[in-house]
Structure formats: structure tokens, C-alpha cells
Length: 117
Image (cartoon, rainbow, N blue to C red; front, side):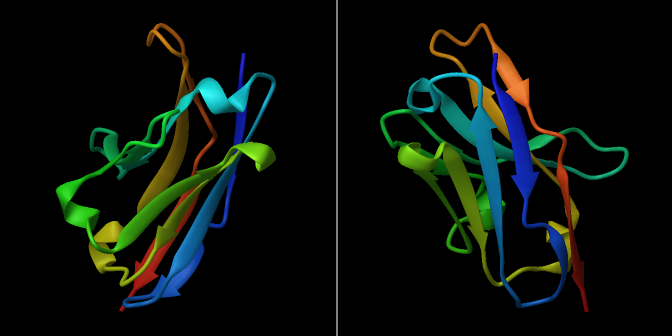
């Protein structure tokens, strides 16, 4: 069992930056693949960025070159550095952890990111 708590969301002007954090507890963080997803009202949750336990990274095309995912296993934390934010980045952002084997997936409660013009 893993508990995930996101923080760092808020209101930012277009072109600005935010850093989201997700702290995990309850299990061995380093073995989990971690991801950031986002979901707008009425839409499906979509992958933003993913980092494996081994450090392999992938991004959604819409955020490549603007967002950076990283993890600090010593702090049980995964980060999402968001830069050059656009209006369409406005969403609730969720942290996700997946155990090796893929059978168990855990979600945080979400943090709101609002980008204003």
C-alpha cells in the first residue's frame, strides 16, 4: 500500500512556472514507477510524464521541452517542474505509483493548476 500526497499547485500566469511534488509513504518508493497525470472536467485522465524505477522517462507530446519529471528516492518524492505554462495546462494533476508487475496502482488526491492569461 502506498499513500501519495501532491502539493505545489496553484494559480500562475501564462508563461510562468510551477513545481509539483508528490510524497509517497507506506512502501519502498524506489521500486515504483511514478507518473503525473492530469484531468480536465469531462475529459479522460491523461499521462503527462512518467519515470520508471530505473529512471527512464517519457512525456506527453504536449509538454515535451516544457515539463521535467524527476524523482528523489531518498526523499520518497517525485517532482514535476512545469515551465512556459499555457492556458491549456489548466487541470487537476494527479500523482500515480505503480508496483512492479503492474497489478497495483495508487493515486494521490490531485492538485489544481490554473494558468491565467
